Image (cartoon, helix red, strand yellow):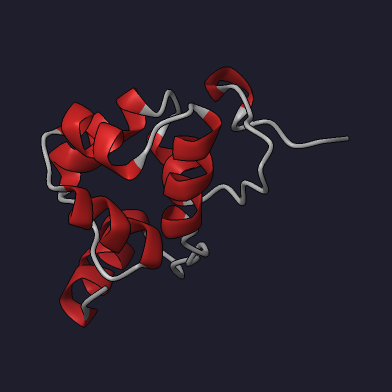
Length: 102
């Protein structure tokens, strides 16, 4: 995140910016496998080349916002879940992704 962007966010929202850990690469792989898709099948569903899915899963590339939205829709999760949740092979329903255990 660039310094100019951070300054803008602080100006709009005030205070410090809390950075969340990004788990996108691992989440793409976990969710893809849970839905039974190969990299090629997922690539076809979101209209990209198979090698781009491989790059997403290794963290060597990230989609633009519209691609991220389509990917979340195809993988049946919210954007927040796709990017930030720490999925460990257990798929959490989208409706429950914002809840924390007691």
